[in-house]
Image (tube, rainbow, N blue to C red; front, side):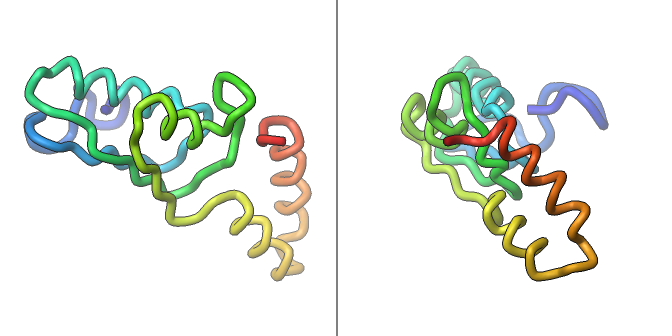
Length: 114
């Protein structure tokens, strides 16, 4: 699904068959839910999974993470290249990035899953 950048609703081939949702990040899971709805509404396609670059490990609507909610609500596998734990570990091992580590830790405390 696309509502910025080049404009339009979709980027790529017309919806048909099994569709893999690809996104840069998953925060609250809103864009994935919207994509699932769009794919299902087409009548020609069904979502088959989700691939994201960064799982921010944020809470979704409830107490589960956004990834857990997508998996539970839609029965879709969600695969990320890295997650917030990976990012924190990287920042911890690079002293020159310490100011960023503190910012990420504050972010996690405010939005992260318990």
